Every structure is written in C-alpha cells, then in structure tokens.
Length: 139
Image 1 (cartoon, helix red, strand yellow):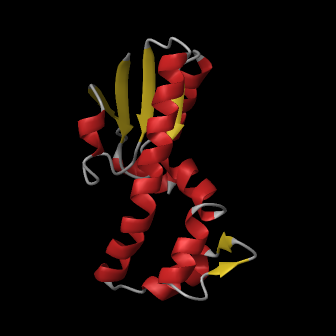
Image 2: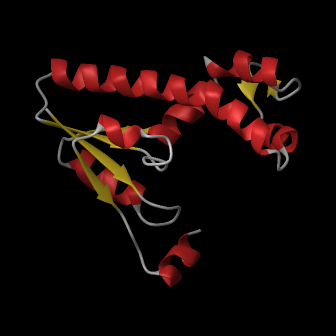
C-alpha cells in the first residue's frame, strides 16, 4: 500500500485536497481531527495532569489550555509529548485498517509532517500551497 503524506501551512487547502481524495474513495486520516477526538477522550486526563484546570467535563478547554501554555516553549513541548504519540497511534491504526481492507493508497493529512518527523511514515508527500493573498483570505 502506498502511504501518502498530505501537508501544507494553514489556509493552503489541505482540507479541500483531502476532501477531493475522500470523494474518490481514498482513505484519509486527518491529524487535526484526531487531536480534537483526543482532547475529548484519551488525552484529556493526561493534559489535565500536566496542565491543571484545563479540562472541564472530560474535555480539554482550548482557551484555558492556551492560557496555561502562554508563550512557554517548554510547556508546548510537554503538550506535544502527550499528544503526538497518541496521534501516531491513531494513524497506525488507520493504516492497519486500510491495509486490512485491501486499499492500494492511504493518506495521512499531517500539517506538521516534517516538524514531527512523520515524513518517515510515508512513501511520498503532497505539499498543498496557495498564493499569499488566498491564504490570508482563508485564515
């Protein structure tokens, strides 16, 4: 199975590209969507333990989390140490399921593909780009 990494900066059109692929029956695992699921599930207790007061009713409150992180890079690193391995687990499960169903192609949509070394998980990379004025308008 060919594993494709789909990446690009904010507002570049990753979601549109992923939707285009899904519409053609290609499985796409969206790392950002996985983070949202994790913030309402498995990651919430771990984040609460690391950043007390950031979880309400079992769901990470992004506003409170942002306030707890501030501009402290060590806190961001700690959050990434919690979340990134859980996202990788979800991606591995997705790829396993795609292989099991006989898919010839699967896509990992990962905004931070290179920054998280996830490029090592893929066979090829698609980088989505848009002109600066389009990006500004989207963001």
